[in-house]
Amino acid sequence: MQTAAIILAAGAGTRMKSKKPKVAHEMLGKPLVSWVVDAAEEAGVDKIVTVVGHMREQVEPLVASRTQVVVQETQRGTADAVLSCADALDGFDGSLLVLSGDCPLVTADTMRALATAREAADAAVVVLTMQPEDPFGYGRIIRDEIGQVERIVEQKDASPEQAAVRECNSGFYCFDAKALFEALEQVGSDNAQGEFYLTDVIEISREAGRAVIALPASDDAECLGINSRIQLAQATKIAQRRINESFMAAGVTMLDPDQVWIGPDVKISADVELLPQVFLYGKTEVGEDSVIGPNSRLVDTVVGRGCIVDETVALQARVDDGATCGPRAYLRPGAHLCEGAKAGTHVEIKKSTVGRGSKVPHLSYVGDTVIGEGANLGAGTITCNYDGKHKSATTIGDGAFIGSSTMLVAPVSIGNGVVIGAGSVIARDVPDDALALTRPEQVVKEGWAALQRQKFAQEG
Ligand code: UD1
Ligand code: CA
Image (cartoon, rainbow, N blue to C red; front, side, top):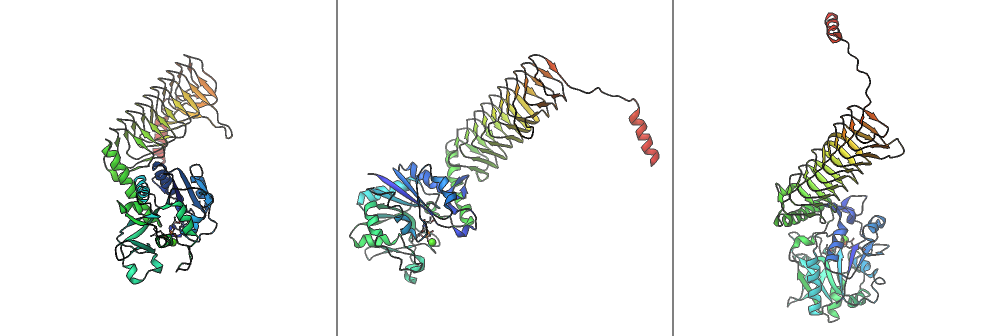
């Protein structure tokens, strides 16, 4: 049977106290709504529709490439939000999941379980339920004498007796799509909030003689909705633990997993060691036997096997097998350390390749540069790649030896096997195997320092 999903993401999220819409807030480097899209894709859903509204210009770009986007102009309730997808799902006949964009911990397994349960019973709706410690604020599941689900009553509409019920609506459902859109036409707004409640569909379906089922969540944590920064931190903790435990089970060592934050799309091989205060976000990958940290942040960065990445910030960079970085290296977009290369202490590299076995060990800036194999850049080598307007390129040949504190004024090309004298300012190309240096004549005045000290002493 075909499966579609609607992700509700039009609400304001006022309790976040933010200028950003709630579903655009990030958990482990990824927007909340994207976690839900990921899970729906993983569950094999055929079509996903996202309902946007409040601050939609910030939400739409997050989902537009992966889901169809529908606009709900005014937020008149969850039933109205689903109804706004009627055109997008016109003619769709199958299982329709309704998901909340602010519940990032929901899993593909749960989505599949909802659809399977609905199809097995040919039910009008299966609602995922939970038993929170404090049910305040949630819709309560009201059952009849024989325990069948009768309806859902919202907190604000509940009698004291109903409010005492612990079983709550998680806000995740699987509907028979055709029956849902028929039932939605009968939903009114005669309730405490004057909203159109999606939950009214439960009672309407039951009265139409269709099966209505409650499926208890296998883990209530999955249903955690994010309404505040406190809940965002709680959900982040749960996600962090889930991800870290699965990597440890797969052979990754963490000295202290509470101090390692890994995004959901990161890949890490066995026998990698992650030290404290490590952030691995985006599409980062780490190959086997590499050691990352302490104090390192890698975003969209691919690290090979047997690398050491110590106190490093790396953004869209590549570190090939056996390369080392840090402590205190900064690899900016386009930095590429080839096999066995080194970017050492207080070294910044941008849009540059450091060839196999080449070393930039101390205090350097390398930008828009291609370095060959086996070259060595002395301490304090700087590529002067920017004239205030344009960026210019530098090339450094195989085996070149650049003396300490050299300025390479780009555009400039240093040949293979070249030696540059320390302290030089190199603004013209240097051919293979040459020595180049620029160095003012040294002045020596014998005894001058001793006389100076004597003079100072007499002054008192
Ligand atoms: C809803 C359920 C409640 C359930 C709870 C679980 C209803 C009436 N109630 O309550 O039974 O226990 O979720 O978290 O459905 N949204 C729109 N457009 C709107 C209104 C809401 O897109 O017009 C979106 C919100 O952005 C949010 C989701 O729908 O992602 C849920 O809406 P919200 O107002 O938070 O519902 P609750 O009051 O929490
Ligand atoms: Ca609400």
